[in-house]
Image 1: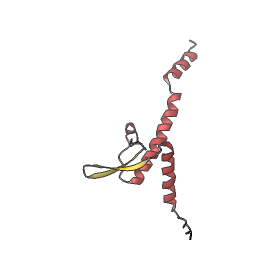
Image 2 (image 1 turned 90 degrees about the horizontal axis):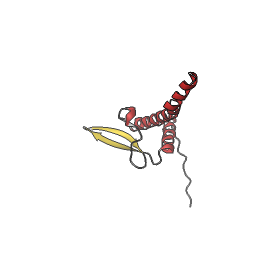
Image 3 (image 1 turned 60 degrees about the vertical axis):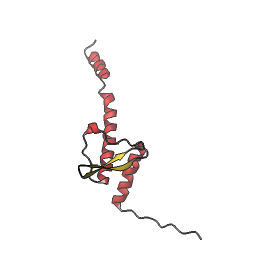
Image 4 (image 1 turned 45 degrees about the horizontal axis):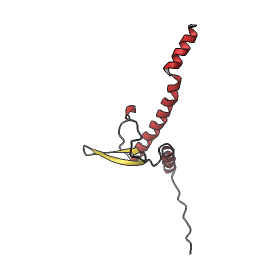
Length: 106
């Protein structure tokens, strides 16, 4: 006899968290949360499938106290890194030199 699956009803907050996790997993396949214990304090971070931290240490994002905060930091890091990558082509030194040379007629 086959059993009927019950439909799981998620709250708006749970739906938003699932959406956030899909966003990160799309960019970092196999992403998961890991707990780090430093000086009797527990911090959480999101790591990719290979165990590397998703949050770039150069962005100086503080450690996360909760799992949800860790995923939010990962989202902002992914978004911010994308913006930096897109902007770097606009501010490429070679492009700036060409533009200045063109303006001054060289």
